[in-house]
Length: 414
Image (cartoon, rainbow, N blue to C red; front, top):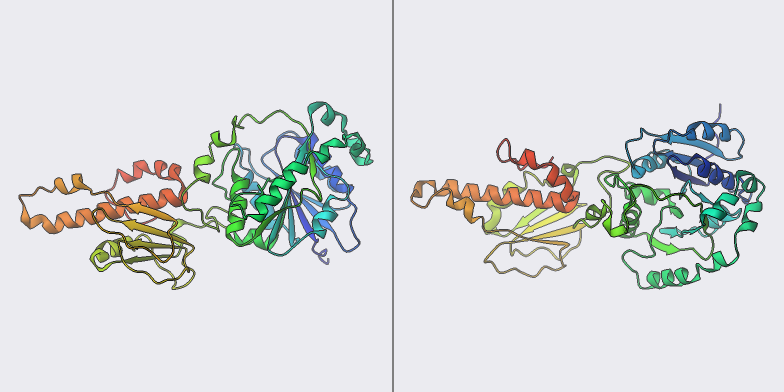
């Protein structure tokens, strides 16, 4: 049997326990009007629904004109990033539209998304929030015959004008985080998602996974632009999820989102990698070679090129290049600090470790070597854990607290 040709786009619809909303979303996609050469598939990324969602999707798959498939996982709480990554790994279209199962779209939405595609660009928009009364009036039948759009007040779309103008300003000044990437309406090339390893699955629970995705796309050289004036969807009302905080900054994921080193290609994405898989380069002044050698046991250099993180110890002079994605400067107490050719992404200052030295006593000159060795190990141990905090988040290091206090000194990165 011959394999069907790859679609132009893959639409990934994330959903959990909202069968009725998802059905209306999928029916709105069935009404899309496309040019002859355009086609799309829909992959439902289901986060462990147990409300008949799976049966509904399978039944609908035989009635819609597009290819409809389902990926799911066990319900172990909010794990949107993980299930969306599964869908990304199965996507056959070169262009990906990300949305949520509580959103519906006018008939020209997908065609406009495809029309405005640009290389090295992710188009972001949003969905207009419909209230409970209006959402209840939009039934599966009104979506199936296309009459639902007539029930939407005309002033609602025009209300997006101010947001659009603000996003264009953010775009013009190359704002670090805005236009904001909202996961209910994103158009991005599959190759760009693969370049950054998809969504970061370390975001568990509500919030920040979309913000992180936008941040890393920008870091990869992808422009994030707003197309809110061209096309947008409509969000069907539903009760607020129990895990949703009162404000964005109160969410459980905010500390990880604001970690000090955000790698463009996340470790915990479509492809799982370890911290030890990263390519580090450790450089140091001659007086810190012993610590450098010890640190290299944990942060190894695997290749002379494609350096992920460069760690510079002390006031050594480094080459005036920017070949490392992230640069960490380690300063020592009571030392002058040389200016680097390029500002580091993170500056760490080693503590003096006076308590560690004192435990060896000053009346035993024969133990000077042991005291020095203990100091180096303490410095290395401190640096390893600070690097883990910076890259993996403080929560990860807290989880490893019991391992730190047992089994003696272990500098090797897990």
